[in-house]
Image 1 (cartoon, one colour):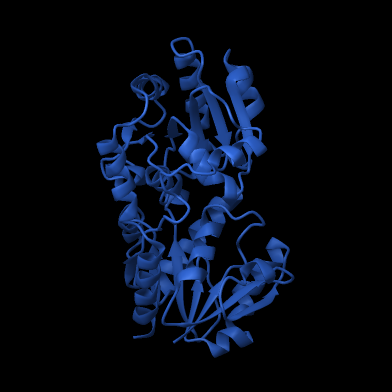
Image 2: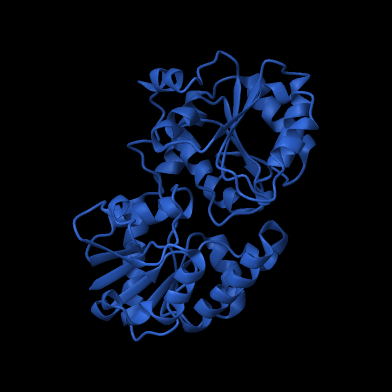
Length: 364
């Protein structure tokens, strides 16, 4: 079976959906894979043997127009049995079977978490996938349940993300040198957040929670790791709390540094209001680090009872939960092992096998 994976929507810095695309390329087996990228963006996608074809426009408006009207008739599409759009969208005009990945449904349930133009676009793309895709991949049961409200015609395969246990594990050997080189070694307790800074991530709640706990735990530092998104005035939020001097803004964190940061943290705080998956929660558990995240969300599904859960948007409850972890100190071996074992249930190999099942359903 010949499969085209369209990675043209991936941003320059791979986070979230971009990392998902890269892991799929590395782990898909049993298919003849061709990767389609933006022009002059081929090199970073040469992650395995096989062809990478850079034929998609760089500018977003033109890229979307090409996808809608031309990519479905391009040479890669004509050669393929399946075209996989891993980020909500797919060619409109094609005779090739189409598989689409739906990451989350918050464009419908919480449009205020997104830029208005993206809400309109992705609602349309998701509705089209429900109507016209040959098969749909959802990255969690939470997303699949919400997607079913659109009464999709296509079969749905739930293919959770994985965790790379070669990188994300509890052994800190070599971490100190990397953290020192990045200017991040400290003897103070660290609360770590990892994620793009945007309204749904709950960074506002986290900063207010940190201000509350700082009086009881003044040595603690809050580290914010993630690239700027939209709709979050971080300068304004930090100006509103007296403990801003104990907040470090790390910006985008490289793959090399991410796992050492997760291991170094005394607790990972991920107070997101809603996600498609919540990969930082899984990776923190794999590193043996305590996690505080939000209940009644996909993070609850992913953590499987191995994280402390709080109500989304409740700064007091979040502060109390973080303070309890800091007061307790390091996790005991039994609790740490539970989180590591839970994370080990999620592998990119299993995710890739489930994607191949979606490709088979699309062509059957």
